[in-house]
Length: 302
Image (cartoon, rainbow, N blue to C red; front, side, top):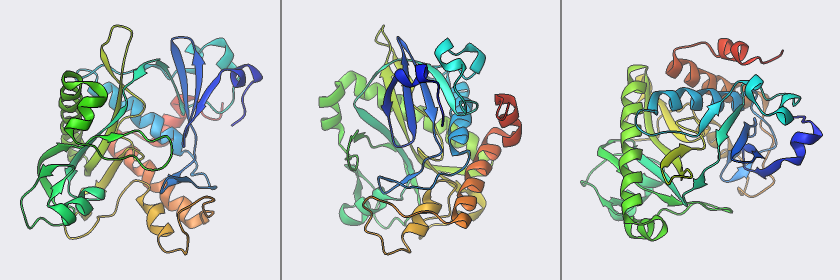
C-alpha cells in the first residue's frame, strides 16, 4: 500500500495484518491483505481480506455497542486527519479509532470443543481449567460458553492462562468484568449468526480502557481472523468442520513438507481464490449485504 510521506512519518506499529498510525489521542488502523498461519506471515496476500476484516468489524461494533462501547470513530475517508487524506488504498480497509490503554490479555470465548481446547480436553478432561463432562466429541457444543483468556505474545504463541493468572495481570474486578462482557458479546453474536447459517465456534476480543477508566472494545471484532466460523449446514461432530476462516490455508499448509518456520511458502492461485471466496461469503451471510456494495460505498477504486 502506498502512502504519503506525511502519513508514513506517523507510523507507530506493524502487526501481522495491521499497520497503525498515530494522531495524538486517535489511531488510524489499516488492515492489509496479509495472511498469517502458524504465527508466520505468508508471502502471498489474499485480495480484499483487509476490507472484509474492516467491514465486519464495523458491522459488529454497531451491533454490540449497547453491550460495551467500542473504539471506532469513523471509516469515512473525508473525516480522516489531513495527513491521511492523500494516502491511497485506505478505502474500505481502515478505521479511525480512539486510542486506548490496552489490557494485557486476549479475551477468548469458546462455544464448541475444537482446536487447542479439544487437545486440552483429550489430555486432561478440562479446557483451560474448566471441567467438562466425559465422553465429549470434537466440535461438540459446550454446555455453556467458556471464557478462556490467554496472554498476548509479542513473539510466538499466546499462552492460555487460568483465572488466577488473569487476575494477577488485570485485577479481580476487571477480570470478572472482561469475562462477563466477552461471554455476553459472544452469545449475542452467536445467536444472530446462527440465524444466518453460521456457527461461531469461538472468538477472541481485545479490550482497553479510555482516559476515564471505562472498558472499551478495541482492535477487531468477530472477523474470520479472530473467530472460527462454520457453515451450519455442514456442521457435524467428530472432526473439525469446514470453515470460513483461514483454516482453509492451514489445511493446505498441512499437506506440505514445511516446518512452520519463516519463510512461509507462496500460496497457489486456487487456494488464494478459495480463501477470498470464504471471507467474502462470511461477510455477506453475516451482514446480509453485498460485499461489492460495501466496496462501492467505501469508495474503493475512486
